[in-house]
Length: 161
Figure (cartoon, rainbow, N blue to C red):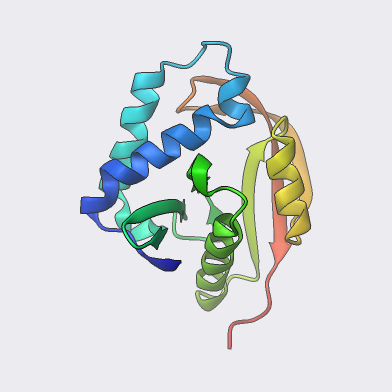
């Protein structure tokens, strides 16, 4: 597996991974048809087209495995999406570690991220990797166009070398 900076040319494939990962997650499975799926798919591609400099992607040969992003280029990890076929293979942990390293190098002392509180797998994953919950509540999610029960996690990072 290789981690690299995304490019605009990757946008369509990355958008599809994000959408498919969402659709197969607790987010998508509990959506109950509230989200305009095609609009969300287009928003994933649009984000990847407009902000490739914020995205780290994981590839193995020609296979795109997943991606993570820091949309605002601060200590917040805005996205972490792993292709359903690549889940359980360490892709998410590798992407998260790379994002954390970039955050530490830029001088931030901690990383933050949010996830749907009902996504038990994600909650376990982040907890196992040292993230601690610091907030839980309802938050409007623009891409889904409704309030979602979210948990914000924080992890203290070692100072960059």
